[in-house]
Image: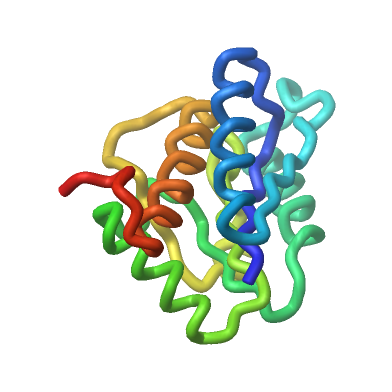
Length: 157
């Protein structure tokens, strides 16, 4: 199974970008992995929040494939411990998913069409973070899940 993080907008802050890249390299040692970035919308400042969600949603849906297990990172999603998150990845593997796609949306969230395409929603926290920070935190959690699944000493309960 391939794990994909699909994120709207680039990571502009160099030190965050470097850290995300580091975790992406680490994850790829364990499992097929890809970070896909959907470019920022041109003229987004002239769009309403709904227009922006619709355009980003269309771009997200174009990246999905039939049979993908699609999980949205959403403030109203389920909150899991790191061990529960690792178990959720293992469960998707056992179910035979070809791709497990985690989607990090834009600043206004997701369109209804993207919600309809998702099989699950996860929340990292009830707090709000920048989209750049979410990428870093989530990439670290995917790496942590890989080490948990293999019984390596990175994670401490």
